Image (cartoon, rainbow, N blue to C red; front, side):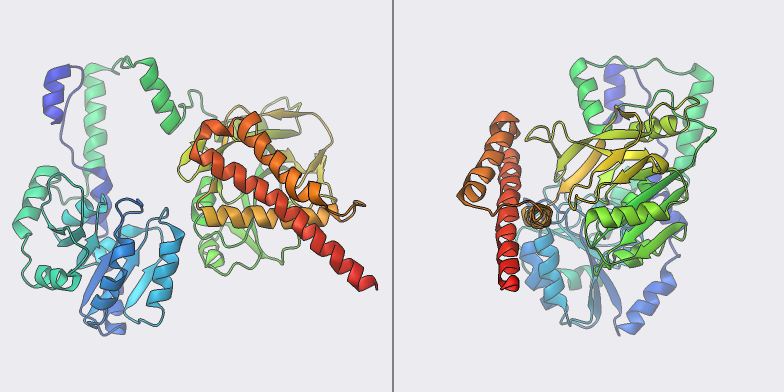
Length: 499
């Protein structure tokens, strides 16, 4: 196909080097052999099966295969590992956790590294996922359900049934061994783990022979699409030297989905401190795998109190404060380093604009288009206002600025999760309102939430966000209602206590 395109366009060359992503499989082929054997012996099993479905609501087999997985688990010969994608609907993760509780030979794996699991597994169960091709190239059988792949060269069923029979047949008879050989010959006939090396050498050779190629002419629409997907390239990145050091701070509670990625995202900082409110989902265990991260556990009272505590623990004057569900793209990272290490510094704090992510899509309006927060500042020039419990506020002693690049905020993963967050924020906001001398009435319960919705949906253009806009604006209004409901409860509690 690429050779056909080369012949048609005549502005690029096609040279086969192999798939660099697969080099790790060659390097680590035997790395987890002993661990696998120990697992099998501990569970008195002889075969290790991996179930790794897609997260796509339209294509995932997770809802339909739960009973099939449990039926398969009755055969104690099999040890079944389940690995869900990070974007899998939390309700199905919860359903599987509850269903397999007490089933000794089924284990839900939450680690990010699926390479180890693919190397250990004797057979893969999936649906429509790119991981199928990686597994086939390891020359091991695959069982899938309702895949939408154009050319299926493995065992696929168009019905969510007979999983046990399919597993047995593929392990005993290996019906698709010839098809796997064809796939390997066509797509990646290499076992040496040197595809990345070949790719670099080919690129260097072409540059030496023909020079650096001219930049391809792209249409404006194509340029905008590339920038939207990948961000603009950093043309003159910061290369040092580092004049000032940065302390990156996080406060966490049950952030197992985000914690590893955000720690890696902050790797450019000179110090990383995580203050955790006694997470129960495995967050603490994940953090402890990073010896360079200073980890502190402390009870949570409110955001201002917890962030003030974290800031007091920082060694350096420049503080970078982000949440676990936020990410710093390369252009923003470059701006941070340039600001902190500028020879002449006239700013003591910087606002970050934020891009709100609704699942994996950008929310462009709904009141979030002007969202900004102080995220980078000098510790010696700021302090948190103690009267704010939610949406903590900094008092800045000096001039501040706004960075051009945006922080990415993965705030909305699911309806239930965001609803819980809005209600929690509303309840904490009610505690701030206690000091004000009023009791909530009909205006607060009806008109304030209604105004919030109208303001964000119509005046701040949430209507242009489609269904996403309706959901976000409604839940934001619900947070206002929750605030006054909690305030009424607190007022009543105080009144009863004073009698």
